[in-house]
Amino acid sequence: MASILIVEDDKDLNAAYKIILEGAKHRVKTAFNGLEALKILKTYTPDLILLDLLMPVMGGLELLENYHLKNHPNVRVLIFTNMENSPEVSKAYALGATRCIIKSWTAPQNLTKVVNDSLKETSKVTS
Image 1 (cartoon, rainbow, N blue to C red):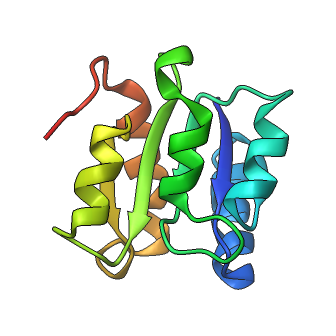
Image 2: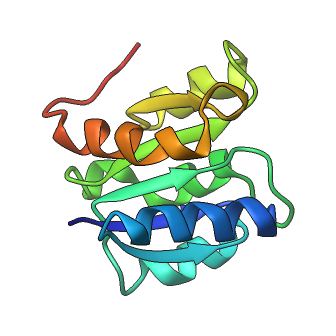
């Protein structure tokens, strides 16, 4: 069981991810933009952040720029987007993201496997 922060502006996806991950016995908090997530992260250090890149108010890249993952080396960040091979994804990796998951290729029933596999990885992916 891990603690997870979902940062996703789509209310339906946010709720679905939460239900799925809680069903797998994870502890889950949610935010709908990067600013909400930063407020949560002041008092909560998750094992994993499931992070959308494009959101209103504050996007995923700006969240990563402000959260400073180097100060939280045990927090894994999964970018969850449909922007495969974009400059934004490359920048997210440079800011400490560990993996990029393409939303349209990941069926909701596979989300738990992807998250659990990412939690098991011992070193950060930098590609």
